[in-house]
Amino acid sequence: VESLALKTQFQRNTIINMKLSIATILSLAAGASAFTAPSLPTAVRSTTQVSETKADLEAMAKQLNPIVGFYDPLNLAEAEFWGTSNEATIGYLRHSEIKHGRIAMFAFVGYIVHANGIKFPWAMQMDGASFPSETNPPALWDAVSDDAKWQIFGLIGFLEFWSELSTPTHKHYMAGGKPGDFPDFVSGPDGIPHPVPFNLYDPFKFSKNMSEEKKESRLRAELNNGRLAQLGLFGFLCAQTIPGSVPLLTGVLPAYDGETMAPFTHNVIGMPFGL
Image 1 (cartoon, rainbow, N blue to C red):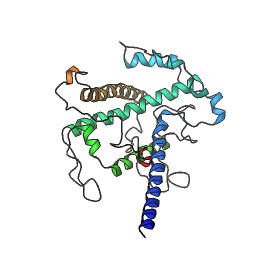
Image 2: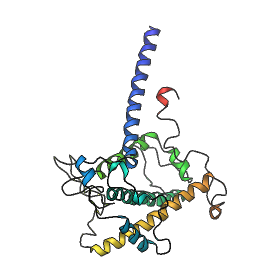
Image 3: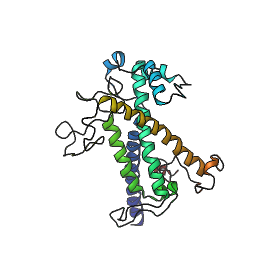
Image 4: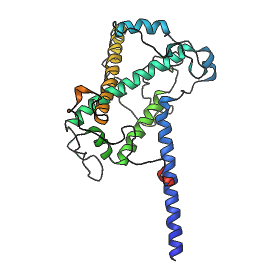
């Protein structure tokens, strides 16, 4: 009887570990799409023509920062990623910068909010657990439950998937589309199977009647703010993990001895294998 019970328990653990491994791989694959080649039709690879070239980047750089100007020490503006054209590669680089700048702006504001102990007054989870009271942002992330983190990663994975869509009304950013443009949420047989009243970009249609010149001006401001947010966020993390690396922040931020690049406090991938 004892042997049968042990065998049953082993089988249960094996099933649980397999499910966890599959979920982990799917989540990481979704997140990694930001750093891998987007899926493009075969025909597009040789015929892609988008509006931006290196000359366009040089002109835009002067508008963004007349002092620094065009700065490309790695010559990425002349590259051709994954066998695509140079124009398609520039579209990819432009979209990546805009996206990461937006994420950094969210993160920078979130960092300041959490560092000041600002949180929602209601429960964070269905079991009644409240939001962590930690005011050290990286340590606060460590205190968030794995279930909550998986929900966050699930949303990120969906948004990554949706942002890569190429439809008759929305061209892919590597195939003539506009870098940074997020597709509208479409409901129905060819889209999301339930109503979605608001889009991720401009949910209240404030920019509906905005001129193209105004939109371009706001995009340049967004690029500059995104670049500054990326520098600021890394400055925070460096000051917390490398003493003295950011003199202006010495003594301002609490130290953190955890792993800033690890989403979980334990080895999620290695755990099913006893690592």
